[in-house]
Image: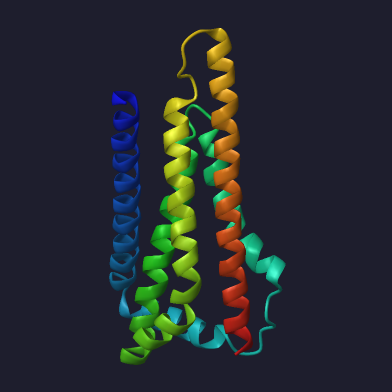
Length: 190
């Protein structure tokens, strides 16, 4: 009972740290967008305004791959002893990208940018952010606990169980990413 309570507390701490890092990364991206010079902001706003014009709508597979590659990097990092750097870098990049993109949309379009970001950027991120947080938390947890167990047989059985759990969690995150890609595809058609 004490071991389960200790593990539950540890999982809560890991999820809290992961959520806090995502929030800080998002904040960092927003600050970076606001620190751009006026010329750089103008250049980026011209790019953003022209980006939607004349481009073909990406396929569901292309959208899924856009999101899946980061999830896959985070998941693969969980299998390595020093994978925290690989997983953390992909996770941080995604969080900074969310903050930067949102802040730039608001900078470029003003008050209309808030509505535009909420309509075009928020719906898929309601699935993406939990998927990345789930995968990063799982990667961190399993990275720290691969070698736990008593005895050689128990260690092997426990490791196999954890590997299966980790793969199942990856599957759940892929389902969330598929939902996000579907939502974005629907939004692009409307």
